[in-house]
Image (cartoon, rainbow, N blue to C red):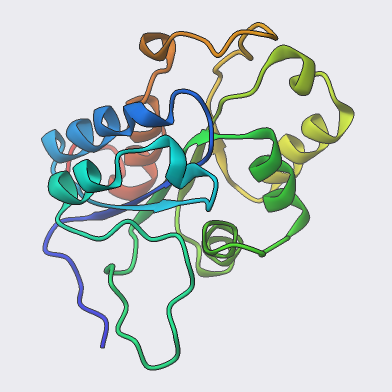
Length: 184
């Protein structure tokens, strides 16, 4: 049985990027704006976050693997999804419809269910120059995905965490979820 959340529910999909450890910033901002939050990490992304701290902040387990048949859904259905940070790999696989992890399956399915989705890519300039990446971003835009204007970080540098604008995901999503209201 799926339980609905009393508050609007945000899935945060976290990928394996240097800034991923700062996901608590987005969780705190979402809570302050009236959202409940659940985190889904890519398998590699798990190694970039403090899962225990995320569980403590959200009250929900960090998901990374498919549940078994008959197991209850550990998260309520999402009202919106933020992919932050999104890696080159995730952006390209998602746009191509590859669903080989729970995170990608969730993103691919969101298109079919109409769940508003925002992505904050975090890629270096060398990867961002690849033509597949530009095609993938175009495909995601055609699918209605809201894409941050974050610039690629310099190659060879992981980038400063404070330069990653976590709250931009909420800024992109809230008008789609709540119309002209800025908060739930």
